[in-house]
Image 1 (cartoon, rainbow, N blue to C red):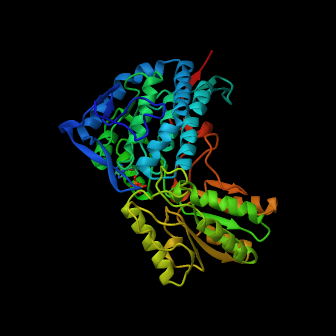
Image 2: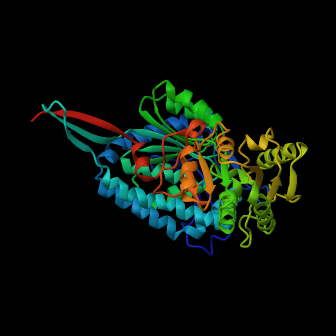
Image 3: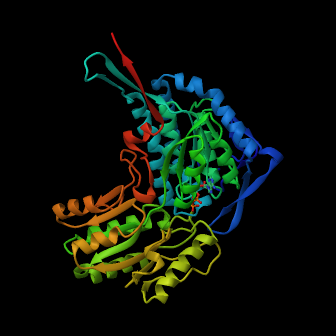
Length: 492
Ligand code: ADP
C-alpha cells in the first residue's frame, strides 16, 4: 500500500500513515495500470505526494464492491449503523489537529479554518448517528376509510458522491454520513486537488469499524468518463454532487439516462445586505466571517456587499481596516489568517475580476494586486464603487475580495440581491427584525443569515434555489435525500 506522512506527524496523534491508493471493497488498491497523479501544496507550489489515478474500470470495481455490501448494510440495524457513525465522529475529533494539518497542506487554507472544518465535518457523523435511528415512517387512515396507508423510508441504493476541494473534509462527510445512516453504500470521488483528506477520513472510518465495501473511494484526474460510467450502471440510484453549476449541468444530463436521483449543491453569488440601522460592529464581524472563512473559497461566501448609503462609508472604512490587518501566509503557519488559494488558475480568476472592476472605475481601498511570493496567494482586498456591469458582481469570486455597492431603498436592495441566476446563501444586517424578516422572505435564496455571518450548521438544511442546486444537505432533510418513500396500502 502506498502511503503519505504529514511533516509533523511524529508530534501528532494519528493513524501511522495516510493511504494514497484507491479504497475498493475495504482494500487499498493501486489504480489500473498503476497510474498516479501529484498532489500540490498551494502554499509553496511544491509536490506533497502522489495518489492513485483511477480509471473507468476502477470505478466499475467500486460499484461492484458497493453492490456486494449493499444488502448487508441495508439490513444492519439502524442502532448498529449509528454506533459506527458515532465512532467515526469521535475518531475524527481525536485526530482533529492531524486532519487540520493535512487539510491546510493540500488545500492551503489557514490552520484555524481547517480545525473548524474538521469539527464541522465530524459533526455530520454525530448528527446522522442520531438521525439514523429516527427515520420515522407514517401510518395513516385512507380518506375513503377502507384501508391504511403505510409509508417507510427505504435506502435509495448505491450512491455516487462527488465533492469539491474547498472543504475536502466537510463536503465528504456531509454526504457520506446521511448516505450511510439511511442504509446506502457509496462511492466517493473527491476533488483531484485535495484527495488526501478523504483518504485519511476513510482510514479513520475503517478503524472505527466501518465494514468493507460500504464506502469506496476512487481518486482520478479524469472524472467525466468515470462518473458517466458509474451513473449508467443500473445498480447506481443516487448522485450527490457539490461543485460548479457548469459541472452540475453535465452530471444532471448523465443522471438523466437512468433516472438517477440527483442532489446538487452548486455555485452561489451571495449578497450581504447592510441597512442604515444595522449594528455596525456586528455587521463587520459578520462580514469578515461571511467573506473570509476558508479564504473566501466557499460557495456561501459573501460575494456582493450591498450597503445602504447612510452607513456605506463607515462600513467600508472599518472593513478595510480589518481586512488590511489580516496575516496572509502559509496555511500551516500558526499566525496565518488568510491562507493560499487552491491553484494558479484560482488566483488568475480573482485577478481578472478585480482588474475588470478597476478598469470600470472601482476604487481599491486595500489589496488589489496579487502577492509576489511562491505558492498561490491573493491578499484581502476591498473594492468600492463597483460598476453594475462589472463581472465581479455576476461571477463567484472564490477569494478574499469584498466588492461594495451602495443602495438607497429597501426595494432597490432586494432587486440588486436577486439580480443573479444563483440563490444559495444571503446575509441581511438590520436592527429592525420586522424589516429583516420581510427582506429575508423576498430574497431568492435557500439560506439567509439574519444578523449572522455563519450559515453552515449540520442541523440546518443547506442548499440553494434557482441555479444553485436541488435538494438539501444536513438536518433531517439531508437523510431523506438518500431514501425513497415506500408506500404500502394495507387492509386489515
Ligand atoms: P470547482 O470549480 O470548485 O473545482 P468543479 O465543479 O469543477 O468545481 O469540481 C467539483 C467536483 O466535480 C470535483 O470532484 C471534480 O473532479 C468533479 N468534476 C469535474 N468535472 C466533472 C465531470 N465532467 N464529471 C464528473 N465530475 C466532475
